[in-house]
Figure 1 (cartoon, rainbow, N blue to C red):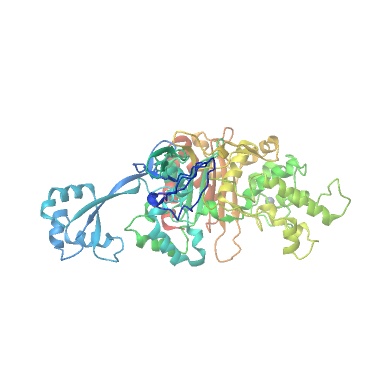
Figure 2 (cartoon, protein in one colour):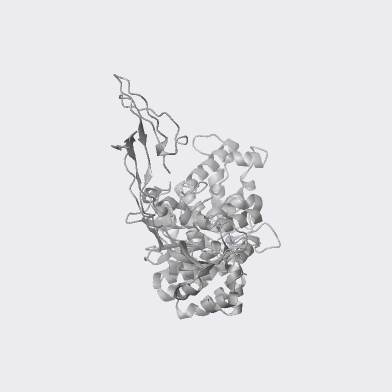
Length: 609
Ligand SMILES: [Zn+2]
């Protein structure tokens, strides 16, 4: 594009005409010079320099190339006249079935609806055409760059280049109507588009009416190739975790707690990364768009769910910080307050309560928090409850909840923590009591967390109180990640209180704990974790299963959150997936002892239940 500006040389610089009005450099007008302020007309132009920037590649944390731009070969068929498809098939080495299939996959010429078409060729087929080009003067051979995926894994992370996703976006708009925006997930390809794309170079010459050069009217823009993106993702771990979830609804997010780097990010049901942009996959895309399981939702980022019992960890940390309990506090497993599914020893302290996930225990922990009378108040319990809930919320919010974490995952949801005013409205009275909000104590009711927040919450506990925002890109070109991913965030909880959670979290995977069967003690890995089973609200569907945990418990290198919709108990459904991802990451393989187990999970994943 060229633009023209008109400039006086009497010390003033003025823009006479709008850029759009003067699109041609020849459009300058001359004026008779009038002394003493000699007016000369100048033309400012923008001239594109040669060179089209290469789009950057996307690599995993070990430098495996996941997405790159490769040439796509297109064979243009004659626009007029009959075509001998039999002879064309012989030229390309195709039998009649292949001819039919390849024609079905062909793309029409731009502007044409069906025929004539361009056939997509492999490099081997291209050389056959070149060899016989003399006999086929009406064929044209063209090529254009195309994003190529080297792995089916990582679809919700990699996303798509929107220039290639127009057919999908059109399909999605028709299929999803008002909820279309929820299906748009361009992944890192769209989040970092400007950096991946690079930019062309431009010169900005200034000329007078006679076309004589007078330098530049602004600095030249340097040509820049697109930059490579180095992901935090471990593609082998990602592929492994995708096999464990398969066709099941839910998510798995694994982080390195020390850096906030996302190691695996699975949204189930899983689909293959190339499907969204592949020209011949419209049918598969239609199936994905129509599926009741909504596989195209980016679940860990965009859906917020009640966390269930895993949230007892956060409530315990807040209660410890505010002095509502100590690690030695015991309560009765009093089932007149709330049911407790487990038959278990008396929760004589926090560790035992966590190990057996005792509901009445955590009911009473939260009641201590909400029903206390703060120092600043007399015994006005309504005001006290409001103040205490607001304070609880402030402490819980410091875990990065009820707001977006600021990750580089598009369309991140904020989740929700109820405010006192929310209950005033919802209960239609300011005089609500703890009895009407107690489900918060076991992570149910109005509270909602995204998968990213669940994983980050786990990383915070592993780090004993701080986090770096979870992110997908650890390096841009030869540089590091975006600056905000190097900013450390601190919760309002002292590290000692997180340390007090650890014995209970380890006990969860030891004898008698709710996830005893998922212990990795046989390979020398101590896992700290917490199971959760989240009531569904509907009697017809199974509960949701959740598990969060990190390993090694005393030197955490990986934190994992798993959530499986309608999968039943957290311990039996979610915990095994989480610990096998830990084992795979820390040991590189799965011990023979768990191979049968692994096979069973994968079978279940394929069936979707
Ligand atoms: Zn109990």
